[in-house]
Image (cartoon, rainbow, N blue to C red; front, side, top):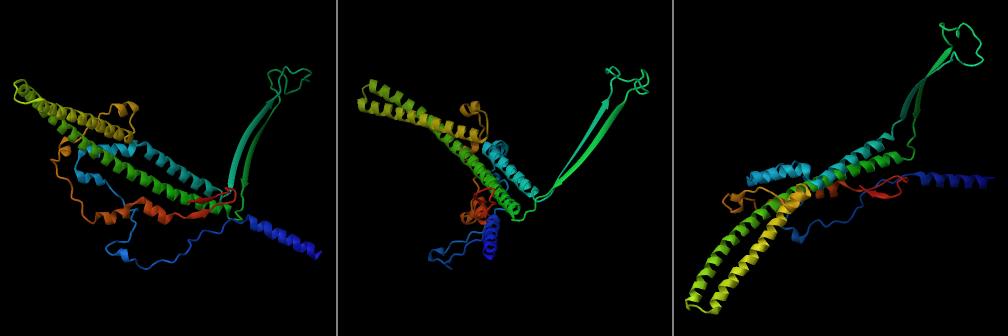
Length: 326
């Protein structure tokens, strides 16, 4: 008898232990070197990703770039996806948190039954005499239900914490996409300006090469130069013409890349019409001075640094069946 009781107690302990969720994640300790010999002149990272970045592109003083940045912030498809995933993560937090509270439901209904005066085998009485009325009855039903599942093993609490970590990760992912999209817009815009300037320079160069070929042709016909000089001039003209084709392709590629970032229609991708600051492309406006130490502080505003700091593996409930990194 004692042996059977001990066996049942052991089985119960095993079953109860299998129902437990956890343990909670704790960051493992690792031996760290107090200092590195290569660390001289370097600054330790201090994440400040929670600070607003602001409209950093305003330092360039280009109204066209400002217009593009404002448009890409509302029209970029990747940014819209990141926003949708953030809303989904917020909904999952509310969904998992709702399981910690009771569920209350209410319902109501009404019914009415009335006897017909034309019913067969109806015995006349005071309620069925024509002009007096017919028998009828009605019911009104009101219902109220409440259910609550006790979170004995911490399944709902753990799932809520996991959803909260997912929400933090989604926020950092959204900020990462926003930073990348804004920087890509500025980069492609300035690449487009450089390609415009190069194309304009090549077109002017082609005009001089055409004039040179015309001049060399006249000198050749006059017997002043030979075939080599004329062929050289023609080869230089053809080389510049080839460079112009490459420059036009570069302009089209940068225009298409910007159009895709702006989330415009496919027709605009193949026939983009993008305004740009001509003065900026020729370098007639002053470029902002970037401090030499700026590279040491740029990592402070990186969403990746904050995500690495705030995220950690969280073991979710057995109903999810996985170890979720959130």
